[in-house]
Image 1: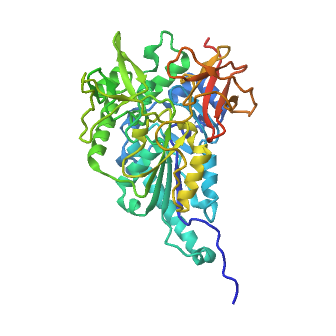
Image 2: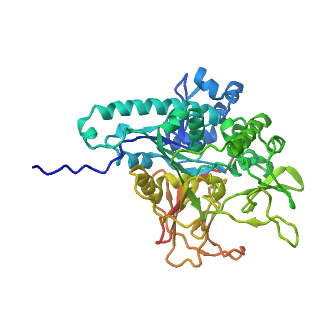
Image 3: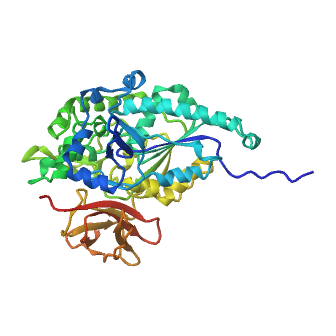
Amino acid sequence: MGVPPVFEDRTRDACVVVPGIMGSVLEDTATGRPLWGLDYATLTSALSDKALFAALHADAQEQAADADTARRAPLTRIRATGLLTKPWWLPVFQGLDPYSDVLKALQGVVPAPEAVQPFPYDWRLAVSYNGALLARAARAHLERWRERVAAVPEWAAAGGARPRLLFVAHSMGGLVLRAALEQDPELAADTRAVVTVGTPFLGSAKSVLALNLPHGQAKPGRLVQGVQAMAATLPGVHDLLPGYRCLDRGLEVERLTAGDVARFGGDRHLAARSLAEHARHRASGFVLPGHRAVVGEAQPTVQTLEEQRADPSVVAGRHYAFDVEADGELIRDPATGVPARRDASGDSTVHMPSARTGTEAVSYVFGQHGTLMRHDEVLRQIRRIALERPQGTDLGDGTGDGPGLSTPHLGGTLGVPLTLTVTGLDTPADVTLSVRSATTGRPGHPLVLHRDPDRTDGALSARFTADAPDLYRVALDTGRHAPVTQLVLVTEPDA
């Protein structure tokens, strides 16, 4: 009798990677002109060429597009050609790492690379529109992969159930995926597992700050003005609006209205549609199949918004949220009646309560939103879920007690020192904070962390002055956790 075969540990499921906002490369369909995400040269061109930002504005047809549009006659003015392969950055949204590492991680646990399918999409447009396109693409991918598996005898010999779908979605990609599975119950039934990483199920207060960019600045720069003007036209940005109680009015905390969003610089109609979707989701009870959420914690995160008394069109972000009872009522201080405020932390973009639905298994990780998809612990967790291994509990404990990193969310200007802030650590001993070029890999020098005398929370800080315009990667390494990283752009001064 021969020796029984020992098969490699592989999943036969079809895998689909869905990126977040800004995570797909876009080009002009008619001319082939790159509009978004090809390389750093394109980024710097976008910052200096108003026409590029203007080309990304959504027109009336694009603003109205929904799931029915996608099924009937998909839009063609701009097309998504692939996932980001280079780091990217914008004010408020900050840094976004490419998706190469997660694609490689999944390709390492499947029988053949074609089992892994990226889903680039035009993130400017509505979540519902892109959800319909994803449903169609995922069904086609699953059917192709099932045919491929059936045609290879050794894969069939390895046994196992008929291939199903495994989705890995980052940020807004999780909302697109939820829309796809809601719209197509048969696709949901063919889905084994969904992994969401930093998905803002309840929205993100940062989206409001992006719409409000120029309002609170005496002399907003060209980049700030260009980003706000573009964001105000995009259904995708409005679909990230917070649906939870986030507007701090002192003794009351209210949900945003379409009028609020319009006053802060957004589009009233797009806001009304997004907020209505939040209300529908609160009532629907839809559950993502096999859902596992990877949630960032311990990073300074805007959770609440507060209007400025002197000018109600200006809104400021606050690093606290409000506790609510099971029935949705605010928890208040018994003596004063003031709503209880609590720093729920998050991943620097999505606060922890928003990244969970309440029905999934949750893993926590110390990491920044835009760099989570190349975070070693996140990649390890994705591989383990793909192989159906038991989930670990060593990514954090959800308490928010860990290393946090904060960089200027509007970037920096050449010659002006940047303040980099580290939270959650008692001492700078054995801690390394470094900066290097994200475009060339050119290393910089380690920075000296010191206690910031102007802060009462015990934070550490360091100063960094760039010697050239570039996209820089800031890395915080404690030696005890996977490094926390963030991207920050340094540009020439505006003319």
